[in-house]
Image (cartoon, rainbow, N blue to C red; front, side):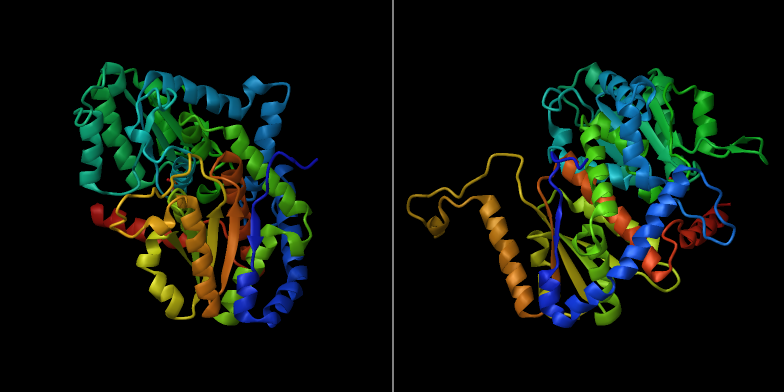
Amino acid sequence: MPDTRIELLRYDATGVIAAYGEEFRQRLAGIAPALDAARREVVDEAAAWSRRDPVPPLKVPLDAGFIDLPDRLLADYNGPNRSESELYRIIAAARRLAESVDRVVVLGIGGSYMGARALFEACCHPYWNELSRANRHGCPRLYFEGNNLDNDAAQGLLDLLVRGAGTTGDDAAGRRWGIVVISKSGGTLETAIAFRTFLAALEQSGGDVPSLVIPVTDLAWDDKKNDHKSLLYRLTKDLGCRDTFEVPDGVGGRFSVFTAVGLLPAALLGLDVVKLLEGAAAMNRHFREAPAQDNVVLQYVGVGHLAETRHGATIRALATWGKSLEAAGLWYDQLLSESLGKNGRGATPLTVVNTRDLHSRGQQHQDGRRDKLITNLIVEGVRQDRLRVEPREGDRDQLNWLAGKTIPEALAAATKGTNLAYNTASRPTADLTLAQTEEASIGQLLQMLMLATVIEGRLIGINPYGQPGVEDYKRNMKSLLH
Ligand code: PA5
């Protein structure tokens, strides 16, 4: 039964067809069978993964576990043994930590933090960390580290957490902090170094470390080493951490936002993780059931693929209108780059925040090289009261002609005006429209983009999972440090 409470996001590629001509529309219809076939393979793969079928030896290993994950988590949570479900455990652990600390540092890099940051920026108050605890509904402030090797940034955060800089007025409770450390492999150097540093600081602060540190990592056993694979798990097991979460087998880093990797930080922020998963599950249903010509995922892939292969649009700009989806754009940059940027192929993603970047990139997008497909990410609703341009006596800045217009009206005019300008210059522009920046919409968006990436991988014969190219820098860095 479709979930009628959830308004599905919409994809409209008429601006791309207008730029490339009717032939494009025909080509798009022409690749529907290939898109359908890719969908069948992906759906079959997800089903085979759920059954834990052995993978045929000649096929590349595919981490299809993320596809059904939202449905599985919800089914367990809504089933008879709710208190044993993963989602229940995540919510309970988040509540426990949120009650005992006022600041949480999320340590992780790449797929191990970008999803959480996307959820944070999309769904929380834009100045969350500056709000009082009451205005944060008793939830902690959230910081991201372990995603770089930046001495001053790490010291700056330690200033806040340990040395109390900038915490005037906070009582002792306000100074308590904890760590969520996320690494699937458990060996990524940036995160491991940060964890050592922040763990030592936490130990010195005298708190109950096992209850203040929550690791999220691979829990698998390594027969050869006769120990757990993840070095992070080995360390946190010795610490006796009270809660530990697994990045499940078959779910890769950048596809892990709907595991504890994204859900635990989201729950710490008081976000409705059930709605988030319901949004993702609604997108799964749409993806499986809607015919290719109405299928948001397949249409998005078809348009991007044809624009790239037929018209040289190798750059995919995701233009978010408003600020709250910038981190979601950066999450997608990583998803697309690491998944399809292989064997000399793969489009280059670019996150754009408008109207801000109209004043930095707009010239090039209007007039520069014809190598870009622009997808507007438009949010229909706003979460706060609409600000209006007020009339002003004297009208010295000559703005009274706008009096009464709201900021959302001005943004809509900028979006429409930009589309018109791009359209006149035959710049291909599509619209992806969300009802709101809240959990159900964001859940759909993230699942849609993950599915699209996997489908496109199928279409161009690239395994979207794994990132073998990243290993080279890691090897070099380690040998230089020895
Ligand atoms: O998508 C990926 O797999 C990567 O971006 C990883 O998330 C990133 O390299 C971090 O890896 P790990 O979670 O093993 O520390």
